[in-house]
Length: 235
Image (cartoon, rainbow, N blue to C red):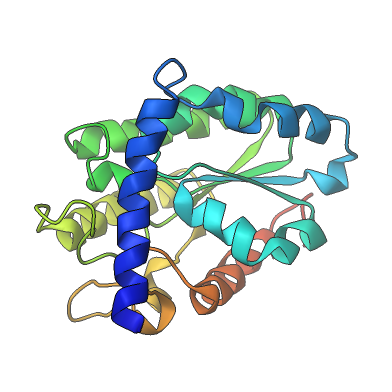
């Protein structure tokens, strides 16, 4: 049953990527995805929009599986399945800056490594993330960076055989950048990875890429520890 479940999830992820490309051909960054929700969030008091979580399906699923994590803390999830850092950067103004949060937590890179819509180039992915940090800071928003989650293979891109090496390299670079600029940094990778292979711990995933509820439990501990140390957004 576990094999069937994981296989269905992988097929679903691949289908989501394909359908997203078709459905948003005229809106590649998918600005429409949160257009109505953003208009509603803007009118909320700051405590209900203090922290925006920007990401892909890992963030989108997080809000679906653990909605109370977001609602109870005044966190705003802005994840879109299948997206890369290139698309995050395009929608950063609509989905982050325009909401006027205190903090943005950026989790980018998984779908870049999976080459969902670009051949992977670490310099460009890193540059996209740096650009988001700079945009946040220019608008009085505190950026928080985070590691790419571990993954051994992507079920929808089985030809990519070096994902662990690419993820480790990007994470090392992000950590060094954050340390040099005193940017808060969330390490999801270490407590979730199998050290021997760089795979996502199978107790925390059904498909090797997306966390289960147990995986999100681990992520929540990690990110809350960082956010609780920040001011003025203390949770």
